[in-house]
Length: 75
Length: 254
Image (cartoon, rainbow over the protein chains, first blue to last red):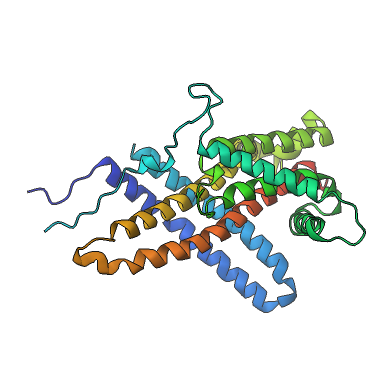
């Protein structure tokens, strides 16, 4: 009786899942530090916000490359 | 006991029929119509905003505040005052990408032009040529290679390791990541919206599990709001990164 089976799509989904761990932690830490910086010095909030968005874009690109790899691996 | 809902396969999401010039390289399908609409809207913004009244009203007001946003929010943050000569190109790029992205949430169309990889790939190659040629004009060909591949203050013994890393990071990863960031964000948003919408429609049955119908319904409403934010943010990040790359290629700090 087969309870579970390793297929291509299953491995692809697992790949993306593991690949989303790092960017999740990264973006959470980044936004947390940005909120702290904005609370310390509210006059710099605009510049901090811009840099935060830039950093989020860089980190999110890695998670999205994993998303593309999911589609490539499940084909 | 089997719960069953019928879903079409995922490849149907980007399967648009070609309805003009079929079979050639110039075939027009729905996505190409979105490209045309974005071009027309961008050109309209530039043309209608070109009136020179001293006290701006209407379309000129909108165009002036748009250009102000790009100048203050993107160019001054990354390049400073010397980057203002890049304002026309960056404004056109930002609004072209934004209008392509915003068609994802407009009812009736609901397909972003940037969800097929051709447009982000073309934009990424264009940005690659722009910042490389700007750097070569500023520093000369050999000077530009030295400027971008050799960071200041690195001991000479480490250079055989640093130079390949810098080469791959500067000339290969930058356009690739620009392309994938824009494309995958928009495609993922489109897939999310389609999945939740089909789930809502499929739950409209006589079975007992039709009680779950409000969940994907609120999901789709929330994700439409989220996709408006993502459309604007991805256009902003693409243009900001272009400005940062041009600044790093033409800077003279070392």
